[in-house]
Image (cartoon, rainbow, N blue to C red; front, side, top):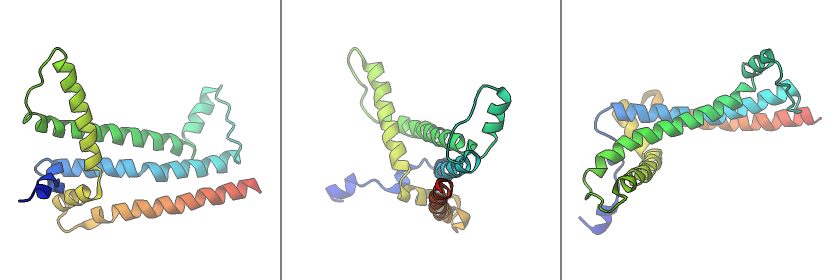
Length: 178
């Protein structure tokens, strides 16, 4: 084994053993990816309902409920989906980082507890970024659905939906600008 092989992180090493962690990662990824189509749907809905003016009166609670159930709600849902998926990924990566942290030497010094928590937070953020990569997701798909199924097509579906809806935003802008 060469030094380069020792530095390489295999995708399977970024997942906990078994199928559960892989499935949770894929679900969080789907929620994360759904934010872009929801965002574009919300923008298209905003153009369709307000004519591009974007002015809404929020004085009446009935108006607030009506606006939150309107197509503009896609904007709010997109932000919520992105934040929830990000924090869920961080929590899943925290447990993963915590398992790896036990192998390290204990911290010493006066601020060792705070330093350990901050180290775990940084390691969790790093593992979350690693776990969002394509190769780790493909390893997760292989664990959850060895034959592939719809899990293999979901990334392509989100890509197509995002592109189509981005074009839709441009069309909606052109229609309201005329």
